[in-house]
Amino acid sequence: MVTKEEVIEQYDVEPMDEADNVDLSEDDLENGSKGQLIKRAGQLRDRRNELNQMASERASKRDDLNAKTREKVDEAQEHREQRDELNEQVQEHKDKRNELNADANELFDEVEELKQDLELGSGKSIEELEEEIEDLEFRQQTEVLDAEDERELIEKIDDKREKLAEKKEKVDDTSELDELVEEAEEVRSEASQHHQKVTELADKAQEHHNQMIEAYREADDIRDEADEMHELFVEAQEAADRHHEDFVRVQKRLRELDKKEEEERQDERAEKREEEKEEAEEIYQKFKEGETLDTEDLMKLQKTGLL
Image 1 (cartoon, rainbow, N blue to C red):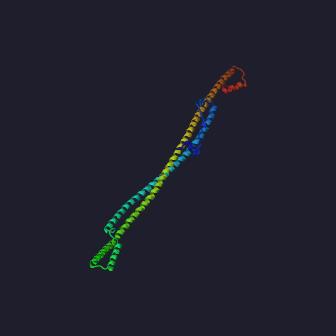
Image 2: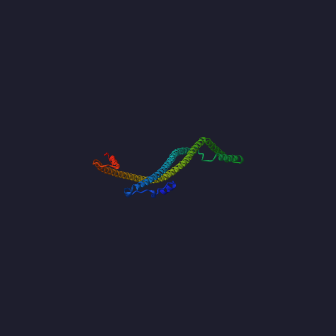
Image 3: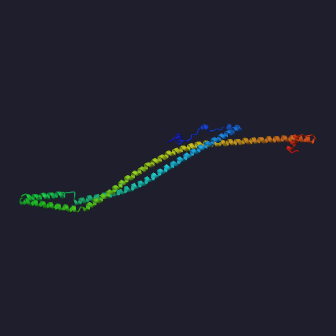
């Protein structure tokens, strides 16, 4: 499982130093001077902008990692599809191989049955019978035999010749057997070809399966990194939001102070106008009583509209 520190180091992420954050207490907000609050607002704004930039960079790296995760998942899916397609072909060749092997087995069974019918596997071979006949004929020609032995020898020769004729006849009838053997061997050979395809395709399917597993594993690893990068983004964004909220609070407090100052100025101006009016009325009363007014008194009367 990847750690946040490993992600920061691997992807060259600027770490967030808590010491650079700007704090705002309720006492600072309520009792700080206007100058202090203006300075604090600037600090909050600058730090907020830094954190927003940091959050944006982290979000970009997170999105890149999520895109790589999707690429790996797509790659794994492609291997899965190729594996499944190959496995389908494997099954097709298996079915064909098994079918052909069954056909070949039936043909070889027929071969054995035909061999038994022809009895080719029993008795002496043609070559052995021919040699025995030659030996008996040579004996007949070279030995002096009485009538009884001569007759028995001739009977043996005739018996051997009959067996030889039967054997040759059976051999002549083996063309059907040869064709059957050839057909069985061809079917078995075709089955072997399908078995070879089964092996080849199964190996390729296994390769795609292994590549699929590896791609999914890499996707999981990258997704873990993306999740950690998202946590880093949230960390920076929440800090930026907190600084923005405090900045807004300071701005609101400054507007309140501005409003209060304006109200105080208005009160001062109204009080001053009232004082000027009272003074002007006194001067005007003196004027009506016939006193001489200087220039300054005349200006005060003009300012208040009494002259």
